[in-house]
Image (tube, rainbow, N blue to C red; front, side):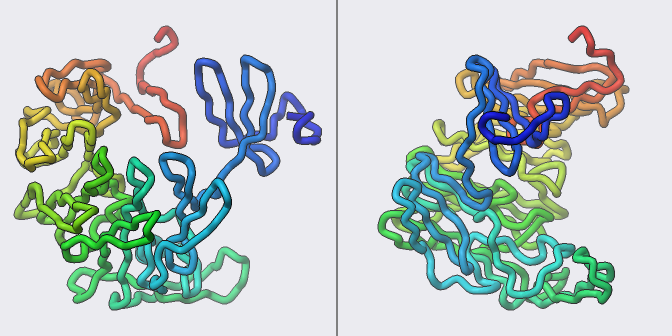
Length: 383
């Protein structure tokens, strides 16, 4: 690192951050001197990595990136650096791939908001289409927000009015779902009304309520009613624009698609087999159900009983086994203590992997920390 960076470095006080470790062979990636580096343990060398801007969404084939500019979505060809606009009619409060202002009332900004964050969109598996949305908050009533102690160090309070809908308001944020064809630059609109904004996490993409079929022909999304008493899974034919409501679930009180409203939904699409693992509390207990996405029919419950599924951890495609955290399975145990289990989604047979009078936490890959299991209240030195 000294040789490549030209900086003086103390080996006992490395100036590195955002460290990630991979195995076989061991490699360490990290930030230092405003650049990204990788150390190869088998060769004993460092290399500087090419890092894309954080607000780019890279296509699966690695050839293109989509980003936001002037309320529209743009494509950058990573081969020849050509840029072109996919949309041209986006505007303030009616932008493409954007999240609503109500998502963050504590950020200090003055209109117009640049909408420069990572686009809310999904590339198709073949990298030829982009599933996204156009936000419409033009008729949403503003709400006054004041920063009495501005973060820029100034003395005078700062005031702004982001659009923010309250219960009972006539107008709330809406999303027009759509697909953009990268080569023809055409827009495919679904034969479906606008989707309403619901939940703490704004928008279908942030909440993980969208996915593609494996052949890149069908885009799926979950539409929630305004007061979240109904959820329905919609298949969107991205060639004709036709839509089909595959199945719906209703409740007299409230439907949530996970146990924590502040987190993405506990949905697990299986595009290769055209199935969906669906989360539901229809029995009074949080469980998982297997649906056929070709017919919209329920195949069978995956888990059931007087206990609940807390979180889906991962899926073994070859074994068709789902890894998850459960709670309440053991009588007289603290119901907040979580177990680690796996279940075959066809047979429903549950295998317990870690269970005791303790709480188990699983940190999945892609989160802020590497994958590890932390066990509280238990000596794990010999594990």
